[in-house]
Image 1 (cartoon, helix red, strand yellow):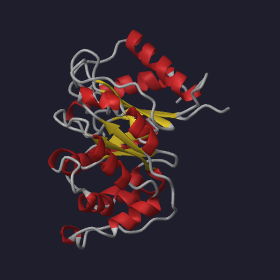
Image 2: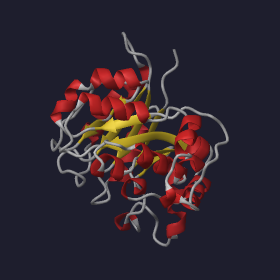
Image 3: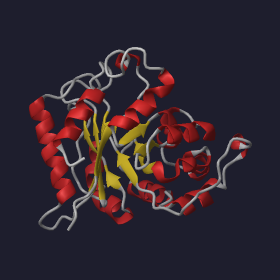
Length: 276
């Protein structure tokens, strides 16, 4: 049986500390995403977490990367942190209407990060997971139910009805009991390294694995040693190959330890160690 596809990248790309370090001195900021696309196979878009982006931005990002590149996109914090997963259908419609579908074949998993104070409430989580669209067609149907706040700034087209994957990053220990529910919905439980700040969940709940590396020793700040990268590479390759009662899985890994510019260097080092 063929192994899953491994993709390694960073969370975001617009960081001043990367300029003159990871990005060559003199590289125009408008070409930074193109530079990322030449060196990685994926990137986590995180601006979508803070505010609804515009269709023109998604079109521009798609055009900047090569064929086969995949964007993960971070779901709106309005859904996760403000509404706290309650009464979110319109907010989800607005999110998918804002231009997400313009990514077309470059659209990868959608990440939903929960706040630390969000405890596992089975009925609430089950209802939320049931609302998530599992295909571009379903996302388009949902997007058409957007409210007037997006009038005149929507993208309501798809070129093909591809599947959409979702991943959940909880930050409360009570979610250790949510594995079966996530498995039923086919949603991945994020494997997050947070320097011990938040719980780490290792349950494999979907046909892919989503990993976020925020720093092994200092949240968002510390880099990864060669030994630590070797350990993560072993895990990633194991998930991709499968074995025993575990099938091969696609694996997406994103470094979010960007505070001191470690993320792109660590991502390149891990990619060189894996089947990426």
